[in-house]
Length: 221
Figure 1 (cartoon, helix red, strand yellow):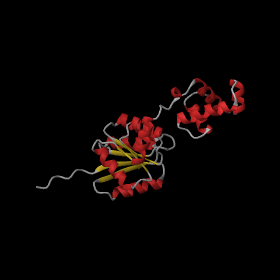
Figure 2 (figure 1 turned 45 degrees about the vertical axis):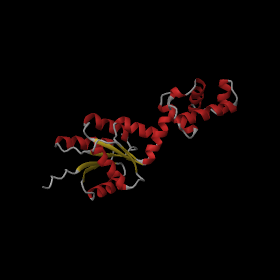
Figure 3 (figure 1 turned 60 degrees about the horizontal axis):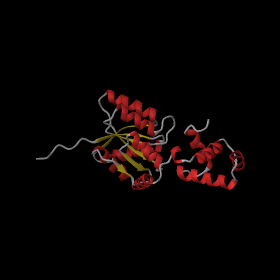
């Protein structure tokens, strides 16, 4: 006796690039056992479509979520999706694999994280894993995540008092010479403190550090 086949996994695609949306929909449409039910250009559009689908009792099983989008990013959108429709799984599909992005997405409720340069079959693997209640991470993302877990905690609490003072002054646009004069330390010592800040925060430049300090509320924008 032949069993009844499982219903297809319904998927909503969310990405601000039309080419990516169309490409993913076409790929999913040709994938057995998967049914694309829509595509959204940003977080607000995604939430509106989900509300409309929910009203028809036709919610998707999985949302493929881009992270970097105008208006409302993927992390914020994921959190709202999981708050309103906890039964809907979210799989992140993005070009960005930095540890803080991975942590943010997973903390928001994502159950998968795939990089856009991965093989497209891996996206289907992540969709199927999410439907089974499993977490699927791109191999490169898993390495980044593992490294971040064994690395020192990144945040304001990781900085010494002097490192924080230097960071605030850098964010205010001060030069090393000005910082040294204000803190009564040498230029080389300022450089050492700044290097420590970049290492602890996982940043690559003074500009990134300045933006981080603004984002964290250490200085006024």
